[in-house]
Image (cartoon, rainbow, N blue to C red):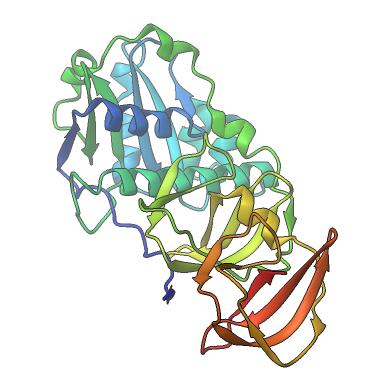
Length: 341
């Protein structure tokens, strides 16, 4: 089996300023709205059944202009501001209201914010990555425009990059959705505490054998937004194992050096497997059809299935839970495999 070393590519970016993308496929629209609804946003205006999500930077003049120009919309729609960039972005997440948004634009934000707000900002940056990722089938522009507006309009989702020309028409376009008023973002709970990371003993890099690409998420939870995917047999560095949850944290990737998480309970357990190899040389020969596994465990992935009589160099033996495993040199690069006696 050939493993090709690779890192996750930097995320492609959302639509260029002035463009609009319409996401009409029901599943795609639902996933995109799930990402922004569960971002950590600041509510601008009273709870409403018409909602527009705004992904922005606190240092963006166009975003500030949108804030100023939308004062007449307050009461007709609720804008939910999702800060992802800017030196005062985390301060907005500490209060999560329109005053915090205005203060950040005006340079009146507090100079120090707590670690929870910083984690919230990292989560929101994952939401921006998720928008990039989910829009790949629809648009492949090279820059993310601040601000970017996301809202439901009928059965579709509109993604508007930049400042809409006629804001007076915006409230008429937005779907009146009773459930929208009561949404509590999952990102608040998901970023409340840092993940408990354990050092990976046995898994310096992670890959998978599934036919379809496997999705990475911005936090170790199925509720976290998807931010990228990986095809089979490609490798990404592992930076830690998230407790006993089955989630694996991969090393920083992309231009902003953020972390990503993949759920793989089997390989997470293999990463923490305790075993000791007792050196033992000589030749090893398959006595029958033998499955050679990546680790000395019955759940470990099968690397190769050998035919009777095939011979390999023995490196040692492992005794675990009453079983004995032969460690053999399986590939020319020295990669070991484990065959159960």
